Length: 266
Length: 250
Image (cartoon, rainbow over all chains, first blue to last red; front, side, top):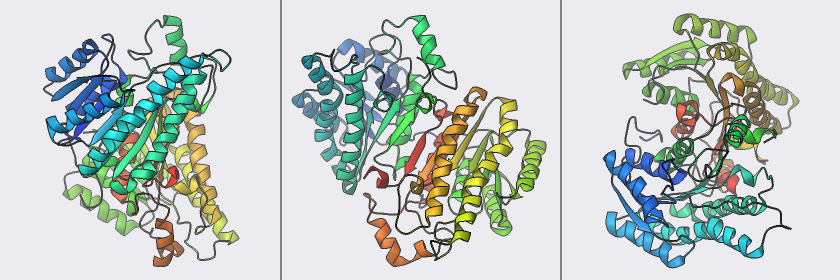
């Protein structure tokens, strides 16, 4: 429509091709990347799933084919430049173009600068930040060639509310800066770049070794008193991936049930 | 449909972004109450919605008028039984007067843009608390985030007030199941009340700040408001969503 309004109904990503990193799930509990991949496919998008373990990917691939969606997969390491180049090539060779890059890959990292080992620091920065630079490096030219599109990076509210996870906090702060810098750099090529800051959601990554007590504490850290789910993050990613947000770039969208508005005990 | 059977009030719904929000909400299944001072324009939007098969009602409202707010809320509740969504969209342009240091303009901007939003929230919150759910979307502006050379600083103050009031309301009413978020449009087509910022030379300067190098469309803001109003944003409260072509990223 001429006034920029979305068209009504289903298929909000019809005709688009997305590359979703971290799209696997290590258990039957849903992950952020997996939730986004499922939702994108439901909305008519062709999806290339990337993860470093084929078994993790097969769970997502099965769910997408069960719901009648179209997906391919690439097993690789997003902190490796060659893998990033190849996954972009796979998307373009398989589906003809690329519109959406959704960067989900990330690892946790706790401790202060006194506690963290330099090698551990480098690893966290490589997986959480360098990976997004690398995937973008190869994806952005293809997105521009396809007539424009969008990059969505997963940051965290840890970037704005530090609490003893210093390497993680710093890496996620870098994701916000990288998002804004790429948004400014590539606006003229019609490539939009935005990030999402999830709060304490219960996902395949965060659920590992989480006790019921901790889970309950995380739930109560939201003034809404509800636990976030990867679907909440996926819904935000869908908005940012679709043309509904075509004048939105460089933003940091907080999806946290209000957690970062206050600083309750957690 | 993304707002199936929800009842929404859109203030300033007769023109510009408010009209776009009203039309989009109706197309997503909401019954829309177009609330505005401008009766004829408001009726026209309601007719447009109805002629394309949607549900809408016009109600006269000056957002600075506490008594009118009570009447509108009571009418909506008696006719439709609930208020699910409030979009506090009504506002006065930061250049409605060419003198951008006018004291009278400062007071008026704060009265309409800030106090009007407070009155809106205050008026619908009791009903939303009773039903245990609701979504309020307050239209702030990039002017609530960054300073600008071409608008009254009272406009920035009024939009900054909306931004932070949104976060307080989000914290205070989260336990009642009510979400409150703000949308921050960037350089848009001139508003009905714009004077200085409607000048073509000024608009050229304004556009230089936008990485995407164009003005926003009212529908693009409406899309963001729809997302926050809908249940897709059920874990989002107190958030600010710029729709600005990258202006505040720079």
